[in-house]
Image (tube, rainbow, N blue to C red; front, side, top):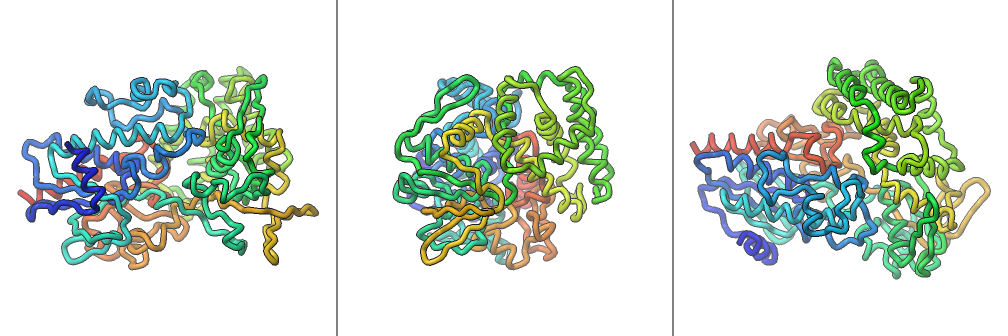
Length: 566
């Protein structure tokens, strides 16, 4: 019943009118974060003896709520997670869940049995199917306690108007007592390029793949520059090769590439640093070999830090625990002493990594991830960061770092993304196979010059220059640069909300409420997810274990609602 209601509402773009005495809640954006918030709201309502009058409007432009654009179920299956399937579970706990509330692996055993390996990095489209399924369950449960409608549209602006919020969509305007913004990436935006390149040479963005990287956009045998060398760039490369009929074949511990005939002639990736992303181990065997007491000890050290942590305390409170945990883990797993100096020296070498060594360190990380090579200091640092990350999130978020401390932490966090939160070993081996085949050329990897003159696009570094047919911008917009035309941009421009620092995210409290200098201007507003990165650490995750914002937000909504209607 709820699905038919929601689909009908979505197609017409007109929600049924809420009762005049009902409390109106607008949830703007319903990817995974919005889904989790709706589930927490349903959990809160389920505990009440008397249900208050509440009307919930979910506003999501993407076709499949719960999945959003990142996990769109229509995207090709070569676009995979960088998060093992065993870690993905849309529900809060195991004790109170219904038989229908399954983890991803449990759901795949029923609906996608060919992908149900807990250690696999499954296609994002499959995860999207799971998340959309979870949304339908949540919407059905929520409809038992309150009225729910879905509008498939984009919100252009929200504005406080006396005692309510005015939510402006492309097709209509709504009023709401409360608004929750969980708008994630705000679509597939990219960071601006410094180079001036004509629009017919530049492809501004990778997604959606079928539109941005089709045969008309990137012709077979084209010479292509690829701005970026991270996860989005990997998606672009695989879409231009495997996505066009190319095949990867196992050959010993490596992969070999067989062209499909529709690929570009060559792809030249380039980035600001030239450093790659290292392979993330898929099997828990190597991880479980480390004594868990090591991680527990150093998590405790981080959690016991005196707050807020200033730049002078940054090394002792945050970085040294990571380095020391890495050296102890390496000692434990290899049975011989590995010093803090050895681990530190590896990190310093990494930060100065010469381009000619990039393929070597990628290959080494893949071999370690597969278990074909003993772990090294790079693996240890990455694993220490992964293991201590929940403690870092809890310590740093909501004022655990001074503003100056954040500016010191941010570049370290970006560096550790490459080391700890990279792609699967399979995708790293695919990139290496394309390098070995000559499809990817790393000549211009770090800081080349990109110029266009009289219609000719060139990439240059040192004494080498190549004429290009296309340049693809594969760098997704930072969480700290919201769209100027969206609801966050309008709130920031009016001064209703503020960032904790010009280069960091929106300042919120633990309930997700913006911390504003204008009293009353943000009453009834909450912002959760990617836009708060900097105030909150680690938003780009499907995990419900790192943060409690969705539960605290839902609890706050119910408390206010009961107070008003009592």
